[in-house]
Image (cartoon, rainbow, N blue to C red):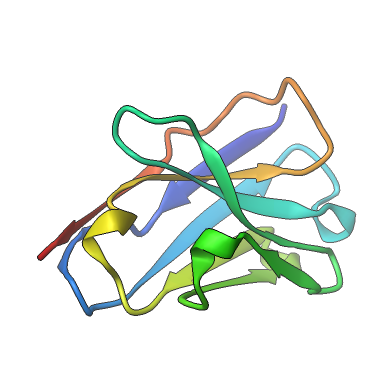
Length: 115
């Protein structure tokens, strides 16, 4: 079945950087558009970046040039680099394939940015 396992979140100081990782399984990863989502405390989950199987990327306006999405198809991995980190980046980050409803969400990875 479809599974997403996110990792890489941490407690970091503002100005630092993190690379979040997501291992996906249960579908043909190399041809699937993948996305990273961000959920701030008490708010709805929102899409911040997507990447096609061939590496074409798209970012939400809120990404502000600080987010970089990438992928490694042979490893079924998608990544999100955030640099520099700001306190407003604090929240839980999830990956999810695009164009599909009903997959179970992963546990996410917690990013906490201190000022």
